[in-house]
Length: 272
Image 1 (tube, helix red, strand yellow):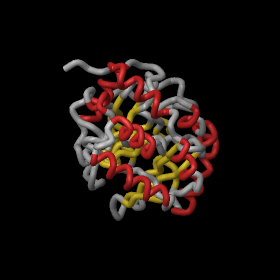
Image 2 (cartoon, helix red, strand yellow):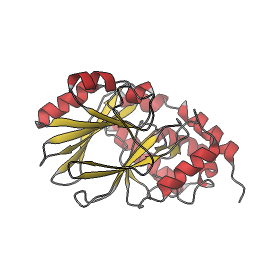
Image 3 (cartoon, one colour):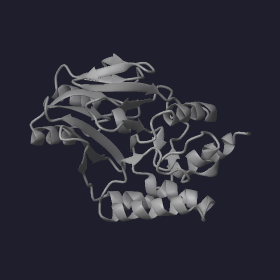
Image 4 (tube, one colour):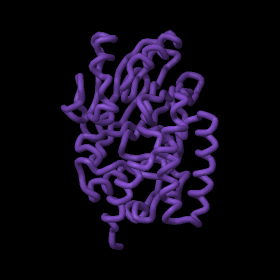
Protein backbone atom coordinates (compact mmCIF):
# COMPACT_ATOMS: atom_id res chain seq x y z
CA UNK A 1 0.00 0.00 0.00
CA UNK A 2 1.26 3.50 -0.82
CA UNK A 3 0.77 5.79 2.17
CA UNK A 4 -0.78 9.11 1.19
CA UNK A 5 1.29 11.33 3.48
CA UNK A 6 0.53 14.49 1.47
CA UNK A 7 -3.22 13.95 1.90
CA UNK A 8 -2.83 13.58 5.66
CA UNK A 9 -0.72 16.75 5.84
CA UNK A 10 -3.34 18.72 3.90
CA UNK A 11 -6.04 17.24 6.14
CA UNK A 12 -4.32 18.21 9.38
CA UNK A 13 -3.77 21.75 8.07
CA UNK A 14 -7.27 22.19 6.67
CA UNK A 15 -9.21 20.94 9.68
CA UNK A 16 -7.13 22.93 12.15
CA UNK A 17 -8.47 26.22 10.71
CA UNK A 18 -12.06 25.17 10.09
CA UNK A 19 -13.74 25.83 13.43
CA UNK A 20 -16.08 28.83 13.19
CA UNK A 21 -19.34 27.03 13.92
CA UNK A 22 -17.91 24.92 16.75
CA UNK A 23 -16.59 28.01 18.49
CA UNK A 24 -20.00 29.66 18.24
CA UNK A 25 -21.69 26.61 19.78
CA UNK A 26 -18.92 26.29 22.33
CA UNK A 27 -19.32 29.83 23.58
CA UNK A 28 -22.00 28.78 26.08
CA UNK A 29 -19.15 27.41 28.24
CA UNK A 30 -20.84 24.18 29.14
CA UNK A 31 -19.33 21.79 31.62
CA UNK A 32 -20.40 18.32 32.62
CA UNK A 33 -19.02 15.17 34.11
CA UNK A 34 -18.83 11.61 32.88
CA UNK A 35 -19.54 9.26 35.77
CA UNK A 36 -17.40 6.23 35.00
CA UNK A 37 -18.22 4.42 38.25
CA UNK A 38 -19.64 5.08 41.70
CA UNK A 39 -16.13 6.07 42.68
CA UNK A 40 -14.71 7.99 39.70
CA UNK A 41 -15.84 10.94 37.59
CA UNK A 42 -14.26 12.74 34.68
CA UNK A 43 -15.23 16.41 34.73
CA UNK A 44 -15.19 17.89 31.22
CA UNK A 45 -14.31 21.56 31.57
CA UNK A 46 -14.21 24.05 28.67
CA UNK A 47 -11.34 26.52 28.51
CA UNK A 48 -10.24 29.41 26.30
CA UNK A 49 -12.08 29.37 22.94
CA UNK A 50 -12.34 25.64 22.21
CA UNK A 51 -10.07 23.72 24.59
CA UNK A 52 -11.01 20.92 26.94
CA UNK A 53 -9.52 20.46 30.39
CA UNK A 54 -10.33 17.35 32.38
CA UNK A 55 -10.46 16.52 36.06
CA UNK A 56 -10.43 12.85 37.02
CA UNK A 57 -11.73 12.54 40.57
CA UNK A 58 -11.70 9.74 43.13
CA UNK A 59 -14.57 10.09 45.60
CA UNK A 60 -13.24 7.43 47.95
CA UNK A 61 -9.69 8.76 48.32
CA UNK A 62 -10.83 12.38 48.00
CA UNK A 63 -8.50 13.65 45.29
CA UNK A 64 -8.40 14.77 41.68
CA UNK A 65 -5.95 14.62 38.76
CA UNK A 66 -6.06 17.59 36.38
CA UNK A 67 -5.37 17.20 32.66
CA UNK A 68 -4.04 20.29 30.83
CA UNK A 69 -5.44 22.80 33.36
CA UNK A 70 -4.95 25.99 31.34
CA UNK A 71 -7.60 27.77 33.46
CA UNK A 72 -6.70 26.66 37.00
CA UNK A 73 -9.49 28.58 38.69
CA UNK A 74 -12.11 26.29 37.11
CA UNK A 75 -10.20 23.22 38.25
CA UNK A 76 -9.86 24.45 41.82
CA UNK A 77 -13.51 25.55 41.97
CA UNK A 78 -14.67 22.11 40.86
CA UNK A 79 -12.44 20.43 43.43
CA UNK A 80 -13.78 22.71 46.18
CA UNK A 81 -17.38 21.89 45.22
CA UNK A 82 -16.57 18.17 45.45
CA UNK A 83 -14.52 18.66 48.66
CA UNK A 84 -11.46 17.09 47.08
CA UNK A 85 -7.76 17.95 46.92
CA UNK A 86 -5.62 18.22 43.82
CA UNK A 87 -3.09 15.37 43.76
CA UNK A 88 -1.35 15.80 40.39
CA UNK A 89 -1.38 17.41 36.94
CA UNK A 90 -0.76 15.45 33.74
CA UNK A 91 0.17 17.56 30.72
CA UNK A 92 -0.12 16.35 27.14
CA UNK A 93 2.25 18.90 25.57
CA UNK A 94 3.96 22.24 26.05
CA UNK A 95 1.70 24.56 24.03
CA UNK A 96 0.31 27.46 26.03
CA UNK A 97 -3.32 26.43 25.58
CA UNK A 98 -2.54 23.18 27.40
CA UNK A 99 0.37 23.92 29.76
CA UNK A 100 -0.15 27.65 30.24
CA UNK A 101 -1.91 27.24 33.59
CA UNK A 102 0.68 24.98 35.19
CA UNK A 103 2.66 27.72 36.91
CA UNK A 104 -0.41 29.31 38.45
CA UNK A 105 -1.93 26.02 39.60
CA UNK A 106 1.41 25.05 41.18
CA UNK A 107 1.26 28.31 43.14
CA UNK A 108 -2.34 27.64 44.17
CA UNK A 109 -1.44 24.11 45.34
CA UNK A 110 2.02 23.86 46.87
CA UNK A 111 4.25 20.81 46.27
CA UNK A 112 2.11 19.76 43.34
CA UNK A 113 3.44 17.04 41.04
CA UNK A 114 3.23 18.02 37.36
CA UNK A 115 3.92 15.27 34.82
CA UNK A 116 4.77 15.67 31.16
CA UNK A 117 7.03 14.42 28.40
CA UNK A 118 8.74 17.67 27.39
CA UNK A 119 11.10 19.93 29.35
CA UNK A 120 9.42 22.94 27.73
CA UNK A 121 6.27 22.27 29.81
CA UNK A 122 5.79 25.07 32.30
CA UNK A 123 6.38 24.15 35.98
CA UNK A 124 7.20 20.54 35.08
CA UNK A 125 8.34 18.48 38.09
CA UNK A 126 8.44 14.94 36.65
CA UNK A 127 9.46 14.21 33.06
CA UNK A 128 8.02 10.93 31.84
CA UNK A 129 8.97 8.52 29.06
CA UNK A 130 7.12 6.20 26.68
CA UNK A 131 5.30 3.33 28.41
CA UNK A 132 6.17 4.67 31.86
CA UNK A 133 3.57 3.72 34.47
CA UNK A 134 2.24 6.25 36.96
CA UNK A 135 0.25 5.16 40.01
CA UNK A 136 -1.77 7.92 41.65
CA UNK A 137 -3.96 6.53 44.39
CA UNK A 138 -5.45 3.39 42.85
CA UNK A 139 -5.33 4.86 39.33
CA UNK A 140 -2.72 3.32 37.05
CA UNK A 141 -1.75 5.48 34.06
CA UNK A 142 0.38 4.38 31.10
CA UNK A 143 2.18 7.22 29.34
CA UNK A 144 2.27 6.97 25.54
CA UNK A 145 4.76 9.13 23.65
CA UNK A 146 2.94 10.28 20.49
CA UNK A 147 5.18 12.81 18.73
CA UNK A 148 4.17 14.89 15.72
CA UNK A 149 1.98 17.76 16.90
CA UNK A 150 4.90 18.40 19.23
CA UNK A 151 8.00 16.29 19.69
CA UNK A 152 7.23 15.66 23.36
CA UNK A 153 3.50 14.98 23.11
CA UNK A 154 2.17 12.32 25.50
CA UNK A 155 -1.23 10.61 25.67
CA UNK A 156 -2.34 9.10 28.99
CA UNK A 157 -4.03 5.70 28.95
CA UNK A 158 -5.87 4.31 31.98
CA UNK A 159 -7.00 0.70 32.15
CA UNK A 160 -7.01 -0.68 35.69
CA UNK A 161 -9.19 -2.82 37.94
CA UNK A 162 -10.80 0.11 39.72
CA UNK A 163 -12.03 1.77 36.48
CA UNK A 164 -14.61 -0.30 34.54
CA UNK A 165 -13.65 0.75 31.00
CA UNK A 166 -10.39 2.07 29.51
CA UNK A 167 -9.92 5.77 28.87
CA UNK A 168 -7.29 7.85 27.11
CA UNK A 169 -6.52 11.56 27.24
CA UNK A 170 -5.19 12.23 23.74
CA UNK A 171 -4.45 15.97 23.79
CA UNK A 172 -3.78 17.23 20.28
CA UNK A 173 -2.70 13.93 18.71
CA UNK A 174 -6.13 12.39 18.20
CA UNK A 175 -9.49 14.12 17.89
CA UNK A 176 -12.94 12.82 17.03
CA UNK A 177 -12.75 12.39 13.27
CA UNK A 178 -9.26 13.80 12.91
CA UNK A 179 -5.67 14.22 14.05
CA UNK A 180 -3.53 17.17 15.14
CA UNK A 181 -1.44 19.49 13.03
CA UNK A 182 2.19 18.56 12.32
CA UNK A 183 4.06 21.33 14.12
CA UNK A 184 7.13 19.31 15.09
CA UNK A 185 6.88 16.05 13.19
CA UNK A 186 6.30 14.37 9.87
CA UNK A 187 3.46 12.29 8.45
CA UNK A 188 5.52 9.22 9.34
CA UNK A 189 5.63 10.41 12.97
CA UNK A 190 1.85 10.76 12.94
CA UNK A 191 1.51 7.29 11.44
CA UNK A 192 3.58 5.81 14.26
CA UNK A 193 1.62 7.74 16.88
CA UNK A 194 -1.73 6.60 15.45
CA UNK A 195 -0.41 3.04 15.37
CA UNK A 196 0.34 3.30 19.10
CA UNK A 197 -3.20 4.46 19.78
CA UNK A 198 -4.71 1.88 17.42
CA UNK A 199 -3.28 -0.86 19.66
CA UNK A 200 -5.50 0.23 22.57
CA UNK A 201 -8.76 -1.64 23.23
CA UNK A 202 -11.50 -0.56 20.85
CA UNK A 203 -13.72 0.16 23.85
CA UNK A 204 -11.34 2.92 24.99
CA UNK A 205 -13.07 6.24 25.64
CA UNK A 206 -11.22 9.12 23.98
CA UNK A 207 -10.99 12.52 25.66
CA UNK A 208 -9.27 14.93 23.28
CA UNK A 209 -7.91 18.45 23.73
CA UNK A 210 -10.27 20.55 21.59
CA UNK A 211 -13.85 20.75 20.38
CA UNK A 212 -13.02 20.18 16.72
CA UNK A 213 -15.38 17.25 16.14
CA UNK A 214 -18.12 18.87 14.07
CA UNK A 215 -15.73 20.53 11.68
CA UNK A 216 -13.49 17.49 11.31
CA UNK A 217 -16.55 15.52 10.23
CA UNK A 218 -17.82 18.36 8.04
CA UNK A 219 -14.55 18.32 6.15
CA UNK A 220 -14.54 14.52 5.91
CA UNK A 221 -18.04 14.66 4.43
CA UNK A 222 -16.85 17.19 1.85
CA UNK A 223 -14.50 14.44 0.64
CA UNK A 224 -16.85 11.47 1.20
CA UNK A 225 -20.41 12.87 1.03
CA UNK A 226 -21.93 9.36 0.97
CA UNK A 227 -20.12 8.21 4.12
CA UNK A 228 -23.15 7.18 6.19
CA UNK A 229 -21.25 6.65 9.43
CA UNK A 230 -19.60 10.07 9.19
CA UNK A 231 -22.97 11.65 8.48
CA UNK A 232 -24.62 9.93 11.46
CA UNK A 233 -21.77 10.97 13.73
CA UNK A 234 -21.95 14.52 12.40
CA UNK A 235 -25.69 14.71 13.16
CA UNK A 236 -25.17 13.26 16.64
CA UNK A 237 -22.50 15.80 17.52
CA UNK A 238 -24.45 18.66 15.97
CA UNK A 239 -27.35 17.88 18.30
CA UNK A 240 -25.04 17.64 21.32
CA UNK A 241 -23.48 21.02 20.63
CA UNK A 242 -26.89 22.62 20.09
CA UNK A 243 -27.79 21.45 23.60
CA UNK A 244 -24.45 22.78 24.94
CA UNK A 245 -23.14 19.27 25.48
CA UNK A 246 -19.54 18.32 24.65
CA UNK A 247 -18.86 15.86 21.86
CA UNK A 248 -16.43 13.94 24.07
CA UNK A 249 -15.94 11.20 24.99
CA UNK A 250 -16.14 8.93 21.98
CA UNK A 251 -15.02 5.33 21.81
CA UNK A 252 -12.00 4.39 19.74
CA UNK A 253 -14.01 2.00 17.57
CA UNK A 254 -17.09 4.14 16.92
CA UNK A 255 -16.06 6.09 13.84
CA UNK A 256 -14.70 3.20 11.82
CA UNK A 257 -15.36 5.10 8.62
CA UNK A 258 -15.47 8.75 9.65
CA UNK A 259 -11.89 9.84 8.98
CA UNK A 260 -10.67 11.31 5.73
CA UNK A 261 -9.51 8.58 3.30
CA UNK A 262 -5.89 9.74 3.48
CA UNK A 263 -5.89 9.29 7.25
CA UNK A 264 -7.55 5.88 7.06
CA UNK A 265 -4.76 4.70 4.78
CA UNK A 266 -2.23 5.51 7.46
CA UNK A 267 -3.47 3.21 10.18
CA UNK A 268 -5.33 -0.11 10.32
CA UNK A 269 -7.82 1.29 12.82
CA UNK A 270 -9.76 4.53 12.52
CA UNK A 271 -10.93 6.57 15.40
CA UNK A 272 -14.03 8.10 16.98
